[in-house]
Amino acid sequence: MRGEEGGTLQTSAEGEKLFKQNCASCHFPDKDMTGPALKGARERWKENSSEEQFYAFIRNPKETIDGGDLYAAKLHRTWGIYMTPQQLTDSQIDEIFLYIEGGPF
View 1 (spheres, helix red, strand yellow):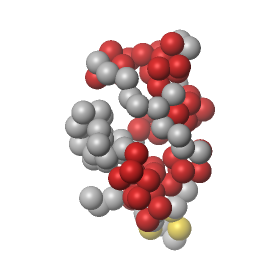
View 2 (cartoon, rainbow, N blue to C red):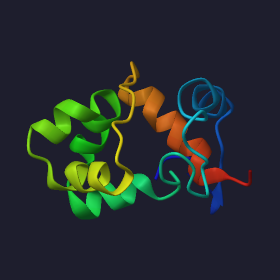
View 3 (cartoon, one colour):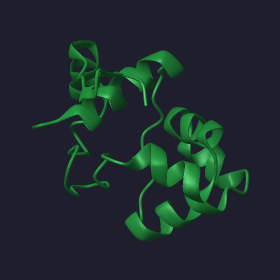
View 4 (cartoon, rainbow, N blue to C red):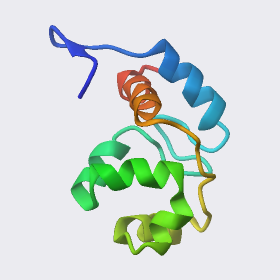
C-alpha cells in the first residue's frame, strides 16, 4: 500500500478532505453506517473481484453491478441501495484510501 515509509503508515490530508467531501455522508472509515466501513475495502475488492473493479465501482456502482460484477452485486444486495457515483480519479481514490487506512479517526 502506498504511504508506508520506514514501517510507519502515513495518512493523507488531501484524502481526508476528499473523504469528507465525497464519502462521509454515507460511510465511516472504521464502522458501518448507511454504507459499509471503508477500512480494508480495497483488499476486500482485490480478494473478491479486482482492483480495477474497485475503482470502477466507486465511479459508477450501478454500471459495475449491471455489468455482472458478482462482488458489486453482493454489496448491493447486502446494503439495499446504490452508492452515489463519484467523479474521482484513481489518484484521488488512492488518497482517500491512504487516509482511511492511516487512521485513527
